[in-house]
Image 1 (cartoon, protein in one colour):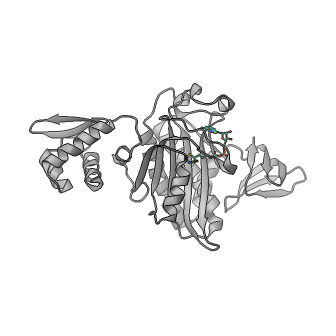
Image 2 (cartoon, rainbow, N blue to C red):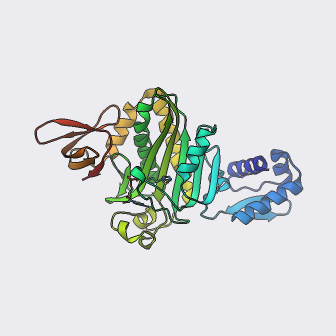
Length: 324
Ligand code: BT5
């Protein structure tokens, strides 16, 4: 059943708004015209607007702002990332589902996405506000053949992918705040949470959680984050297609991931630094071992933050909250 739907969506993606006859669709999907009709009805129930014209066939004329498997697949241009999609309307956390799938043989590139998270989380089990129908709440499973020490670099690769995706779908200029925040005009639009399933010498799975505020207005945020959070819609002054945002993140991520596996972290580091908000500025890093104040010098070849304090001592920061 699902594989027929996949083939139909693929065919509609490639037809780019042109009509496809019932017979052509039946041939592509390897089923009867009656079965095609049933699948078309299912797509309509999901919210797709399909035009049917006698002797011409079907075409998709409009799609709602949903992030279902079919909607993300329609027009997705990746070969690995997002080729398997688990969509649910409401979940406690996509991160938890991705962990379970990763432990049960999920393939590389598997995407878990939901319209709402009721227990979304950030680092150190902080709360991540994930209201219904206006954000992108997703977790991506990668399986690179690398030692676990490389995992933090994936937060930085993802940050670059997210920034590039925002630049592609809006006219905005996002910035990266080390290690995992994407800011627009100084406010947080996206948070990234990189987690690991690993043995001492090798990664089994990296689970990358991305939470992006897309179509929120300020009232959608709880009072305590209204002054620090923003959304693409607030900054751009227009609503966006969440599925297009997801597709663009997956496409950018796939090309950066390929680049990284081929050439290592150096090209990513250069891109990352070009978007970083704090380099050359005085910052305060709150770590679990205390607070360090100084000038942010940049990141090392491994993605570790370097801060020079007043005595000229350079500290390497592996994990912290940064105040600029
Ligand atoms: C993060 O943590 O920024 C990582 C957030 C990752 C969320 C994704 S959504 C999909 C996947 N499933 C999950 O359950 N999680 C991942 P951290 O750096 O610890 O920042 C958390 C802080 O950001 C909170 O303490 C709030 O101050 C703030 N915050 C919470 N919700 C926010 C929102 N929607 N927008 C902006 N800031 C928010």
